[in-house]
Image (cartoon, rainbow, N blue to C red):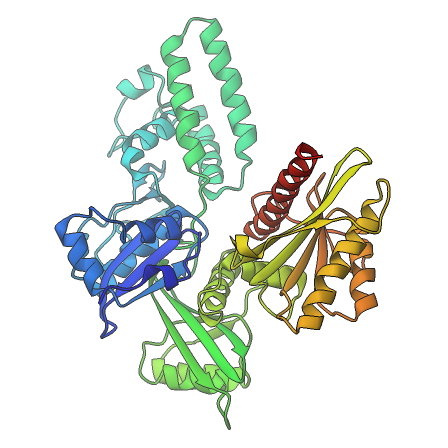
Length: 527
C-alpha cells in the first residue's frame, strides 16, 4: 500500500530524506534544498517505472535537517556509503568535494588533498576544506597558485624556471628576497583558506588590480583576476558536515527531556567526517540518566577520544575514567559553547526537536522557542483592520494550521461599536467578539494570536482578552521593521528577514490583510 504523503508533515528546509519499507529497511536516501518540494515530487503521476516501484514500497520517511544544501550533499554521501540502500547508486568517487593541502616543504606547495577510502588524508602538511565546488578545483588551485606566487615544481630547479618568466612564481629557490617573501605569500594564502583574513579586503585589492590591468589594456591579466575573484568566493562556504580542523575521532550527543522521556541523537565523526547518525530514547525511570546511557552505549560501540555533548552528564570524571580503561587512551567529555563543535551540537538539537514534535514544521518549533511558548503554535489566528476613509472599516482574521492557510477558518467583521478611524478600538472589538464567542461555544482556542501592528494594537488586543477572561498567547507584528512585540516588554524581538519563524508570522499577517482588503472592496462596491 502506497504511503499517503498528504498525512506526512514535511519540513521546507535543506536536509536529507530516508525512505523506508514496512520492515524499517532503508530503500533510498536523497538530499534536497527544500525537502517538502522534493519529497512530494516522488508522489506525482507520470514517474518512470523504477521510481513507481520505489514509491510503492515506501512505508515511512525520516528527515535529517541541515543548515544548507552543501551540508545535505555531504551527509547524503556519507549515509549512502554507510547503509548502501538498494535504490541508490553506490558512490565510488571519494573526491566529490575538495580539500586543499599546503605541504611542509622548505618552500611549501598548494595541492589537492587526496584521501583513502577510510577518510585518512595522504601526505604531510596542513589540510583545509572542504570546498564543495569541486568540479572547478584544478582551475581554482591554478589561480590560487598564481595569485599567491606559489611554486608548482616537484623538485627545486637549479635555475629560475618558466613559471618565473611567466610571472607566476618569484623563484624563491634562486633569489634571497623572493625566499624571504615566500613565507608571507603562504601565510596570506592560509589566512584566506582558514577564513581569518577578511575576504572583502582581499577582494577589494584584487578589484583595484583588475581595474588597473583593464585600463592598461592587459585584458588577459584582468580576466585572470576576475576568475580568481569568482573562485575565492567559493572558499568561504562553511561546512559542518566535514571539517578536518575538528578532532580526528569524535562523537556528538544531543539530549532533550520531554514528558518523562529522554530523546537523544548522535553524530559520529572520523577524520573530520560525519559518518553516521543514530537516534535513541529512554524513560526516566530509576537510575536511567544520560551518564548511564553513555556507559551502556560504549560497552558495545567504539570509544572515541572526544565525546561532545549538549549538556554535561553526571559523574563525568568517573565516566571518563571508565571509558579510558576500556579504550586504552584518554577520553574527554566536553560541552562546547562556541565554534564548530557548538554548531554541530546546535544542528543535532534542531533535529531532535523535529523528532519529538512528531514532524512539526521546524519553523513553528523555532517560533515556539523564540516566543517562549509552552506549546508549538500549530494554530495561529491573525487580526487586521482594513480602513478606507472614515466610512469604510472592516476587520479580518486569517487562520494558519501547521503553517498552512485554513481558509474555512477565516473570519470577517463589520465594525459595530467604533466610529471614525480608531484602529486600537477596532482591534479591541473584533478580538473580544471572536474569543467571547469561542468561549461561550466551548470551542478550541488557537495556540497563538497575532495582531497586525505595534505595541498599541497589541495592548488593545490584550485588554480585550483580559476583559473576557481568555488566556491565549498574543503578540503583534509591526510591518515597518517587522518587529515582534510581546506582552510585558517594550523591547521587540528582531528576527532576520530570512528567518523561517518570521516568515510564518508574515504569511499569517499578509493573508489577513489580503482577506480584509477584499472584504472592504466588496462592501464599497455594493453601497
